[in-house]
Image 1 (cartoon, rainbow, N blue to C red):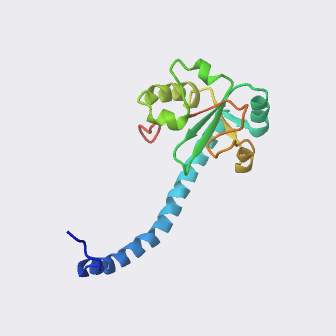
Image 2: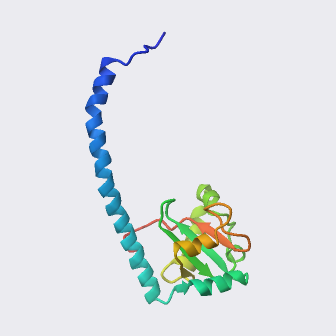
Image 3: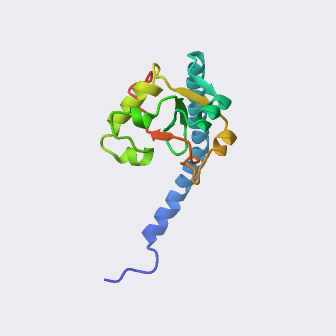
Length: 172
């Protein structure tokens, strides 16, 4: 059976009817994106302020001193490729301290046992009662320690990327 080369009248009519709807959706996506970004940014500022109040932040200079001396581990919580991304530092070597096999983020995200490692890491380091410090650095500072690809850091920096804990409620 040979397919027709010309568009059918029904296909052309559907396109003409759908085009205005697509244009409206495209126009509405701009304010929607702006609002969701503003809400996400506000939530992150509120979170960072709560960590600052709790004494759980680390300035960039202190972080660089620790990392350059080979101490501690950078814990990367990436909520999505677009963000937010939370960078934590702990004085422990997470790979040695973790009682479970730990691998980096993207491989970890596909591992069925990720829930156990993620929950352990959250409880021990990144929860309200955890021991890690959120690192206060701007984009340029973070770029200065980036490795050969955007999702890696330069040699000599011990880091682990873990998926963030799933939100169980608005308070967690």
